[in-house]
Length: 145
Image (cartoon, rainbow, N blue to C red; front, side):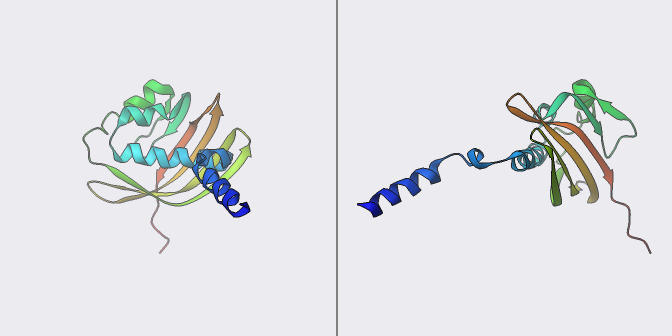
């Protein structure tokens, strides 16, 4: 009987949502993963929804600072139908507090050519949601000769 109870308990634990055990770092990392998924789907509106209304974006292909939803939407307006994709590479996450996490790493954009880049995301918890408050992306410089 004890074995049966243990088996039932383990099965029930396996059915619990993964987020029940996630902390700030895991939650923020999931936002970066989701950003890549919707970027790869070329869904600009879904990308924009991941940013806080007052978010800041230093995009890879723009010399200006994009401030707020409208500017970020304008930055991503060419994404739909573009076929652009991104692959997240090395990533390091640092919890700044229980409601703020910084993610720093490398990604690679593809289409029409492969463009390696680096990123910094600051992801914050607003209410029940984790959103991007700051995103800086820049082309990866070539290695020193």
